[in-house]
Amino acid sequence: MKSFIEEAKLVIFDLDGTLYEDTDHFDYYADLMKAQLHNEELQQKFQQDYEAMKAGNHVVKIGKAYDVENDYVLTLDPMSLTVTEVHDWDGNVVDTSSMYAEPLTFNFENMIAIGDGWWLPFAAAKHYGVEDTYTSYNKTKEYMVTDNFQLTKTAGLKQGLLELKESKKIVLCTNSDIDDVGRLLKELELDTVFEHILTSSMKPTKTEEHFKKLLAQYEVEPHEAVSVGDNFINEIAPALKLGMKAVYIHSASDERNENLFTIPTLANVW
Image (tube, rainbow, N blue to C red):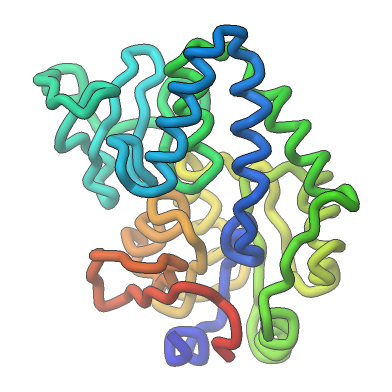
């Protein structure tokens, strides 16, 4: 990982799940949406499914996709975004090859890339009929900047980023909106660190577009740039496809690529 970073001229970081690793807010988000189910039995099923997802014991897992309209869970080739297998909510294989003949396009409404913990409760909510998830998302973001929620600062991260900044361009590219990003970076004491910040980035749909523009803006070749993130579909696969290097924040990944380095956390890596 250090060699990737040391040789780079441009390092592009994700925010959620990368520069902070707290997960309690996902449970808060889940509880808000579960409360919209007025049937106690549905609430119990929602909770059971959500707990199974977090434990890795459900067909809905990080790294897959969720077709909201058809209630199907899709296994993907992350590099091509083509569907390799389809399951229903109960984990049964469904033969729907003709439905997903083309690479997927994600729109954050009907076709979802389950790239991180935000999307597990979202999928459960949609399966059980919750229509309004956005209000709960906004309330969760508001909760995250109150005294009731404390972001855990990743050990050594601020100093490491400041050291990187001395010799490289470091950029933040996140799906969070500008107000959330400002609050989170201030809470993490990282608000003066980044050369450039891209918010509401619509990853993974526009990841390659953003990366190409950044490569051109800073006049660096793809092999001189590194993408750092916890979401393989959003930040890692697009970088590898462009010939960039990537650092994947993941506890145990089976992905193998000569330009890929996997670590469980950014804590004390410099």
